[in-house]
Structures are given as structure tokens and as C-alpha cells.
Length: 269
Image (tube, rainbow, N blue to C red):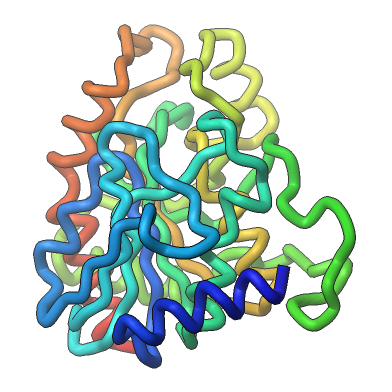
């Protein structure tokens, strides 16, 4: 794997992506954040050696490097998912590239269904912990040059960054929650029984991404901060028919508030 990482990293450096301060992975309907970046270099995933290609609507499939919040960042406008047919190692491979490009911390966003009865559509949840029901991306032979065999996940999401986000949300009067994110394989949305089960075992929101990326980031000792935009509700009495299009629409409505939080956090790095 290290050979592939080095090959991809060297290609991106040759394209002008040099010493970024942070990386951002943007989920469904949240790619508009990149419109606030300046002096950008854009590279289609299909042109990057060893990269998968996004196949889901709402994931443009571009790596964008530029100025954002007074820092140099690399943004993934679209991510990869297990349900697309990619293995866990492929889904999380870009995180390794971001780390080797030099990022100091990783920011992630996703669209998720809320199972906490206090949540409303359009809320933002700062992820404090997760329940991973996807195959672990670290299965198989470990390369000690990249990370340890048994990484600790006691603080998968950085406490300092979480505290900073809550302060920023308060200063900007943004409604925000803290909670546990649960990841499933998808691509089906959940049944009412599954929603009840996920709530019982401790989840506040459920989606189809993020946890493999965070696991790989922690494997390489990379601090993480992640938010879920609540685009639908899996709460008894509030469950409605959900489509990918409706998820995109709700995510886009919330994007400006999520972008405010991300911008201020990156400024403070």
C-alpha cells in the first residue's frame, strides 16, 4: 500500500498541491463549501493514480486545493462508499493521501438520518463518537510504516476541535447538537425497526459513510472533526418517505451554517 500512497502523493505534488494545513471530506449535498475557496487547483478523481471514482449524485468527484479560512486546504468534493462496490481499503485510501500530503487535521461532513427524538430536520450534529457497522478498513496485513496494528479509538473525534465548534456555533447562533454517529453499508434507507434498534444501542444519527475514513485517520494519528447534517428523521411518528434527492435538498439548505463552522475552525488552526 505504501508504494501506491507514494505514487499518488507524488502525482498530486507535481500538480501543485503542496503542504496543505487541513483536509476536508464533503458528503452528500455539501460540496458547495468549495465555492468559498480561492486560488484553486481542481483535479478530477479519474485523473488521479490509484483513486476510485465517485458514482453517486451529489458527489462531484473532484479534489480541490486552495485558500480557505486563511489556510491552505485540500477538499474532497465527493467521497466513496462501501455500497458503490468499493472495498473498505479503497473507501478510505484518500485519507492516507491527505495525511501524506501533510495535513494536520481532517474535517468531515455527512448527511444523516436523526434517531434522537430531540433532533429536527436541518439540525447539525457534532460527532463525538461512532458505532461502526461497516467492515473495518484495517482488516488484513498491517504495514507498521503507516500505522500501528491495534490503534486506540478512545478519542476518535478530537475533544479540542469539538469544544471549538460548540463555541463557534454559540457565537453565530447556530443550533447544534453533540451525538453518536452510526454507519451502515446502505444503500437502502433504514426500516422503522432498524431505526429503533440503532437508538437502543446508543446512536443519535445514522448514515452510510465517515467511520472508515476516521478509523484510517486514527490509524495514522491524524486528529478528526466531523459533523452530520440531519436531513431526515428515523423517529417513531416522524418517519417519512426518504429519497436521495430529498436528502440532497435538505443538506444544501443547511450548508451555509455548516460552512460557517468549518471556516471559523480552520481559521483558528
